Length: 158
Image: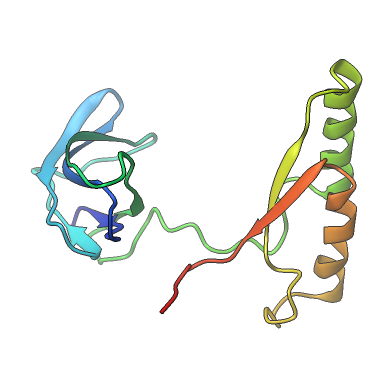
């Protein structure tokens, strides 16, 4: 099959117009993107085995903002499965005690440096698939930062 690229289209954002995908230091694909939301799929000239993947934005359509956004990059095998899909993780990449240890190292080196930490919003009761143990991690993470924020995706408003 081949790769897919999802463009974020939102009022005022710059839009990627042309991208290149590279793997192992070689260009796999150069493609023009349409100014529309959703995944845009492309075919490769030949099958590729990929251990590292780089996407380069070669040109943009300017917007009111100088920045833009890509939603995701996908890669499909012969059966049409997205082999780049990263499933949700039930455990964090670093448990609270590891994060707290790193926080203390930073503060020991420079106590004036603020440490920011952004978390998922899984502590919110809305996310009913989270266990009590998973929700209990959040107060522990808060102790490992000076400023804490969290994200909820997708972001939408009316």
